[in-house]
Image 1 (cartoon, protein in one colour):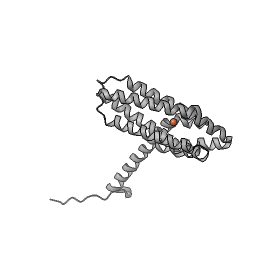
Image 2 (image 1 turned 90 degrees about the vertical axis):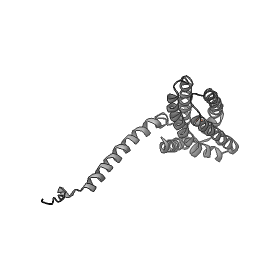
Image 3 (image 1 turned 180 degrees about the horizontal axis):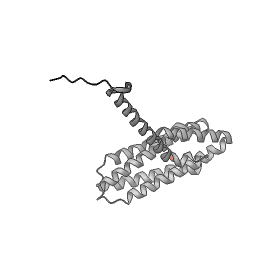
Image 4 (image 1 turned 30 degrees about the vertical axis):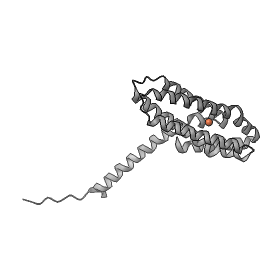
Length: 192
Ligand SMILES: [Fe+2]
Protein backbone atom coordinates (compact mmCIF):
# COMPACT_ATOMS: atom_id res chain seq x y z
CA UNK A 1 0.00 0.00 0.00
CA UNK A 2 1.38 3.33 -1.03
CA UNK A 3 2.37 5.57 1.80
CA UNK A 4 0.45 8.79 1.49
CA UNK A 5 2.41 11.91 2.17
CA UNK A 6 1.09 15.09 3.53
CA UNK A 7 0.80 17.48 0.64
CA UNK A 8 2.80 20.63 0.81
CA UNK A 9 0.47 23.56 1.28
CA UNK A 10 0.03 25.78 -1.75
CA UNK A 11 0.58 29.51 -1.89
CA UNK A 12 3.00 29.32 1.03
CA UNK A 13 0.14 28.84 3.46
CA UNK A 14 0.18 26.17 6.19
CA UNK A 15 -2.13 24.69 8.76
CA UNK A 16 -0.45 26.88 11.34
CA UNK A 17 -0.69 29.90 9.04
CA UNK A 18 -4.40 29.29 8.50
CA UNK A 19 -5.12 29.08 12.20
CA UNK A 20 -3.12 32.26 12.85
CA UNK A 21 -5.15 33.99 10.13
CA UNK A 22 -8.32 32.72 11.81
CA UNK A 23 -7.13 34.02 15.15
CA UNK A 24 -6.26 37.41 13.71
CA UNK A 25 -9.65 37.59 12.00
CA UNK A 26 -11.42 36.72 15.27
CA UNK A 27 -9.32 39.29 17.14
CA UNK A 28 -10.16 41.89 14.50
CA UNK A 29 -13.90 41.23 14.75
CA UNK A 30 -13.68 41.34 18.56
CA UNK A 31 -11.79 44.64 18.42
CA UNK A 32 -14.43 46.18 16.13
CA UNK A 33 -17.23 44.93 18.43
CA UNK A 34 -15.34 46.38 21.39
CA UNK A 35 -15.08 49.80 19.75
CA UNK A 36 -18.85 49.71 19.14
CA UNK A 37 -19.52 48.84 22.79
CA UNK A 38 -17.14 51.52 24.05
CA UNK A 39 -18.76 54.15 21.87
CA UNK A 40 -22.26 53.15 23.01
CA UNK A 41 -21.42 53.10 26.72
CA UNK A 42 -19.48 56.35 26.47
CA UNK A 43 -22.18 58.16 24.47
CA UNK A 44 -23.77 60.16 27.33
CA UNK A 45 -20.50 61.92 28.14
CA UNK A 46 -18.61 61.65 24.83
CA UNK A 47 -21.21 63.86 23.21
CA UNK A 48 -20.95 66.42 25.98
CA UNK A 49 -18.43 69.23 25.73
CA UNK A 50 -19.37 70.11 29.29
CA UNK A 51 -18.02 67.59 31.84
CA UNK A 52 -20.47 68.83 34.47
CA UNK A 53 -23.56 68.24 32.31
CA UNK A 54 -22.16 64.90 31.09
CA UNK A 55 -21.73 63.60 34.63
CA UNK A 56 -25.20 64.82 35.63
CA UNK A 57 -26.65 62.86 32.68
CA UNK A 58 -24.85 59.72 33.87
CA UNK A 59 -26.20 60.26 37.40
CA UNK A 60 -29.73 60.38 36.03
CA UNK A 61 -29.16 57.27 33.86
CA UNK A 62 -27.77 55.36 36.87
CA UNK A 63 -30.79 56.14 39.06
CA UNK A 64 -33.09 55.13 36.19
CA UNK A 65 -31.39 51.70 35.97
CA UNK A 66 -31.78 51.25 39.76
CA UNK A 67 -35.48 52.12 39.49
CA UNK A 68 -35.94 49.53 36.74
CA UNK A 69 -34.03 46.96 38.80
CA UNK A 70 -36.21 47.66 41.84
CA UNK A 71 -39.26 46.88 39.73
CA UNK A 72 -37.96 43.41 38.74
CA UNK A 73 -39.78 40.64 40.60
CA UNK A 74 -37.77 38.33 42.91
CA UNK A 75 -39.11 35.53 40.73
CA UNK A 76 -36.68 36.68 38.03
CA UNK A 77 -33.34 36.45 39.84
CA UNK A 78 -31.47 35.95 36.55
CA UNK A 79 -32.83 39.27 35.26
CA UNK A 80 -31.66 40.94 38.48
CA UNK A 81 -28.20 39.40 37.98
CA UNK A 82 -27.94 40.72 34.41
CA UNK A 83 -29.05 44.21 35.44
CA UNK A 84 -26.58 44.21 38.34
CA UNK A 85 -23.80 43.55 35.80
CA UNK A 86 -24.89 46.61 33.76
CA UNK A 87 -25.29 48.76 36.86
CA UNK A 88 -21.86 47.78 38.20
CA UNK A 89 -20.29 48.54 34.83
CA UNK A 90 -21.89 51.96 34.44
CA UNK A 91 -21.05 53.03 38.00
CA UNK A 92 -17.45 51.79 37.64
CA UNK A 93 -16.99 53.76 34.42
CA UNK A 94 -18.49 56.84 36.03
CA UNK A 95 -16.27 56.45 39.12
CA UNK A 96 -13.19 56.11 36.90
CA UNK A 97 -13.95 59.50 35.35
CA UNK A 98 -14.53 61.22 38.67
CA UNK A 99 -11.77 59.56 40.70
CA UNK A 100 -9.09 59.83 38.01
CA UNK A 101 -9.85 63.28 36.62
CA UNK A 102 -12.50 65.35 38.39
CA UNK A 103 -11.59 64.72 42.05
CA UNK A 104 -7.86 65.39 41.51
CA UNK A 105 -8.84 68.72 39.96
CA UNK A 106 -11.10 69.45 42.97
CA UNK A 107 -8.12 68.68 45.20
CA UNK A 108 -6.00 71.29 43.38
CA UNK A 109 -8.26 74.01 44.66
CA UNK A 110 -9.47 74.49 48.18
CA UNK A 111 -11.58 71.31 48.15
CA UNK A 112 -9.11 68.62 49.26
CA UNK A 113 -11.38 67.57 52.11
CA UNK A 114 -14.38 67.41 49.82
CA UNK A 115 -12.40 65.24 47.37
CA UNK A 116 -11.46 62.87 50.22
CA UNK A 117 -15.09 62.62 51.31
CA UNK A 118 -16.26 61.88 47.75
CA UNK A 119 -13.62 59.17 47.34
CA UNK A 120 -14.69 57.63 50.65
CA UNK A 121 -18.31 57.61 49.50
CA UNK A 122 -17.30 55.88 46.28
CA UNK A 123 -15.64 53.22 48.43
CA UNK A 124 -18.92 52.68 50.27
CA UNK A 125 -20.82 52.47 46.98
CA UNK A 126 -18.36 49.86 45.66
CA UNK A 127 -18.82 47.82 48.85
CA UNK A 128 -22.61 47.92 48.43
CA UNK A 129 -22.30 46.84 44.80
CA UNK A 130 -20.08 43.96 45.90
CA UNK A 131 -22.67 42.84 48.46
CA UNK A 132 -25.50 43.10 45.94
CA UNK A 133 -23.53 41.13 43.34
CA UNK A 134 -22.83 38.35 45.87
CA UNK A 135 -26.31 38.26 47.32
CA UNK A 136 -29.00 35.67 46.58
CA UNK A 137 -31.04 37.63 44.03
CA UNK A 138 -34.41 36.31 45.23
CA UNK A 139 -33.62 37.32 48.83
CA UNK A 140 -35.75 40.22 50.23
CA UNK A 141 -32.50 41.77 51.54
CA UNK A 142 -31.54 42.44 47.91
CA UNK A 143 -34.20 45.14 47.46
CA UNK A 144 -33.41 46.65 50.89
CA UNK A 145 -29.70 46.96 50.08
CA UNK A 146 -30.52 48.29 46.62
CA UNK A 147 -32.68 50.97 48.24
CA UNK A 148 -29.79 51.90 50.55
CA UNK A 149 -27.49 52.14 47.53
CA UNK A 150 -29.97 54.45 45.77
CA UNK A 151 -30.25 56.77 48.79
CA UNK A 152 -26.46 56.92 49.23
CA UNK A 153 -25.97 57.65 45.53
CA UNK A 154 -28.65 60.31 45.45
CA UNK A 155 -27.13 62.19 48.36
CA UNK A 156 -23.64 61.92 46.84
CA UNK A 157 -24.89 63.09 43.43
CA UNK A 158 -26.81 66.03 44.92
CA UNK A 159 -23.68 67.29 46.65
CA UNK A 160 -21.70 67.02 43.41
CA UNK A 161 -24.34 68.58 41.16
CA UNK A 162 -25.59 71.30 43.50
CA UNK A 163 -22.36 72.64 44.92
CA UNK A 164 -18.98 71.00 44.31
CA UNK A 165 -19.03 70.57 40.53
CA UNK A 166 -20.54 73.99 39.67
CA UNK A 167 -17.99 75.63 42.00
CA UNK A 168 -15.14 73.81 40.25
CA UNK A 169 -16.46 74.76 36.80
CA UNK A 170 -16.72 78.36 37.93
CA UNK A 171 -13.13 78.38 39.20
CA UNK A 172 -11.73 77.09 35.88
CA UNK A 173 -11.34 79.03 32.65
CA UNK A 174 -13.26 78.02 29.52
CA UNK A 175 -10.13 76.38 28.12
CA UNK A 176 -9.48 74.46 31.35
CA UNK A 177 -13.08 73.24 31.42
CA UNK A 178 -12.77 72.06 27.81
CA UNK A 179 -9.54 70.22 28.65
CA UNK A 180 -11.16 68.66 31.72
CA UNK A 181 -14.07 67.40 29.59
CA UNK A 182 -11.64 65.82 27.11
CA UNK A 183 -9.63 64.15 29.87
CA UNK A 184 -12.78 62.87 31.53
CA UNK A 185 -14.00 61.35 28.28
CA UNK A 186 -10.64 59.64 27.77
CA UNK A 187 -10.77 58.19 31.30
CA UNK A 188 -14.29 56.91 30.59
CA UNK A 189 -13.21 55.29 27.33
CA UNK A 190 -10.69 53.16 29.25
CA UNK A 191 -13.54 51.38 30.98
CA UNK A 192 -16.45 51.86 28.58
FE1 LIG B 1 -20.83 61.34 40.13
